[in-house]
Length: 324
Picture 1 (cartoon, one colour):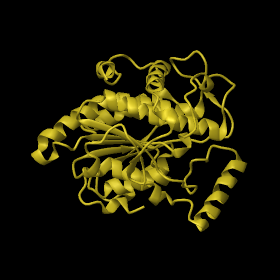
Picture 2 (cartoon, helix red, strand yellow):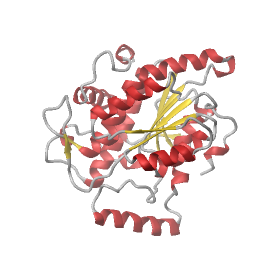
Picture 3 (tube, helix red, strand yellow):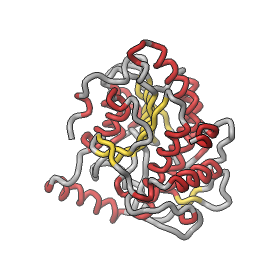
Picture 4 (cartoon, one colour):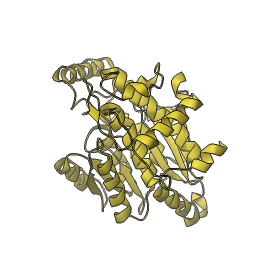
C-alpha cells in the first residue's frame, strides 16, 4: 500500500468535520490522525474517555473532540448522534470503524426485537446502521453546502465510509442466526457481521441523496489493533501471536497501513463520484457473492430498521430505494 496521507489534494479541509467511530486506538486512531492532517475537525469516539481525550488532544489542528458511547446500547448511539448535531452544524465524513470480536455468544436487548441479538452483529452492523441513519440529514445538508461553497467542489460530496473485512466472503445472510441463544460464534459471527456491512453499504448508496456517497472497504489484516480485547484470553494471545508471525512473513498490516483505505475513501477527490462500492487497497473490487444479493440487501435493511426501532422520519431515503 501507499501512504494515504500523501494523496494529492484532499476533499476535507479546515472548517470540515469528520466523525471516526472506534478511534481511540488501532485503525480508527490512525484514520483520525490522517483526517486531522487535512485541517478538518475530527470527532473521536470510543468507550475509554481518558484514551479518547488524549488522542483528541494529540491530533494536529484545533477543536477536535471526544465522544463516549457504548455501541451495544442503542440509546447511547442516539445520544451520540444528538450530541454531534448539537455541537456541529455540519458533518463532512462519517467513518464507521468501531467493531468487536467475541469468542463466545452474547446477546443484547434491542427495542424492536423480542429476542436478544448477538453482540458482534449488534456492534459491528446495527450500531453503524442506526448512527448513519440518525446523521443522514446532517450529512445531506453538508453535501448541499459543499456543492454550493465553490464551483470546484461540486463533486465533493459528504462521505460515509464503513470498515468491513474480506472475511465476509463465503458467507450468506442469516437473519435468524443472529437472534436468540443459538447461532454462529467467533469468526463465523464476525464474518457475518462484516457481510452485513457490505450489504448495508450497497442499500445505503441507493437511498442517499446526490450530495452524499457511501462506500465500504477491507482494511487489511492488522492483529496489532484492539479488536479482540473483549474476546477470550486464548483468542487474544493467538491473535497477537499471529500478528508477530504474520508481520515477519509480510502477511499482515500495521494499523497505519490498514487505515490507508478508510482514509482514502473519506478524503480523496479521486472517489468523490463513487458510491456503493467495496474497496481493497484503495481499489474497487467485487465483494463476495453473498454481498451482491439485492434481496438480501433489502431484507437486512428492513430487519435492521425494525430491531433498532428507527422511526419513518429517521430512515434514509425510503422513496429513493423504492425507485432503485
